[in-house]
Amino acid sequence: MRIAAVLAALIAVLAASTSPAPVVRHGEGPAPRPVAGIRVSYQVDGVTRIAKLQSDLVIGPGRLDAEIDLASGTITGDLWLPPADGYFVVFGFVPTTARTTLTPVGRVSGTISEGQVEARAEVDIGLGDVAVNEQPLDAGPACATAEPASLGLAGPFELAQMRLTGVYAIPSFGNCLGRERLDPLFTGLISGPGNAIDLTLTLLPTP
Image (tube, rainbow, N blue to C red):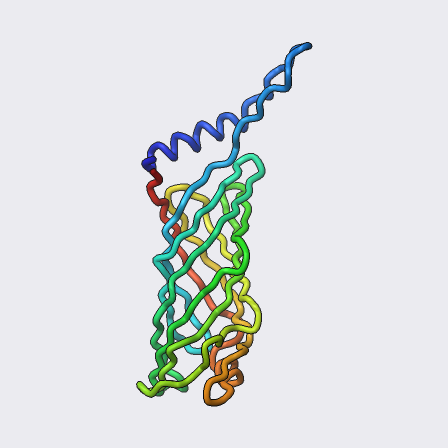
């Protein structure tokens, strides 16, 4: 289905959801309720600004498979994001690289009201392949935030493309244990509030 067809379906659903309920005559069964949900898939691209490091991490391209219920004004979906290779300058002069994983915990959920969408996703933030000044730093196989980061996103609702932004906190890290325990180091360098995120969702063609 092309984007034009999806838009036509959206218009039809909106018209159905706002039309008066059909009259049910004696002896007839209940009138069928109009279908208000549509299934869509988006490519997810963006960037997040790590406040403590004053560095950007590029996100995507990922994917969001979502169901939009226009009758209730809700969005639910399943998010997938690929690992991201980041370059950071620690202490203002030490070049550091790391592979960052953003692993969704549960489903994305959101609401649509007065042309605005508000959504929330929970993600575990993992660190791997860490190198400081090109020297590998063993963070262990399970280095990640001790609890999920809660990403609150908001922006204008547009079916074909949406830009959602927000600010979130990065929790402390745990299980960062290779040759030595690095939880305190990563928590001190990365964890904290004020991290900005900017995502663009672009509607994908569906078969």
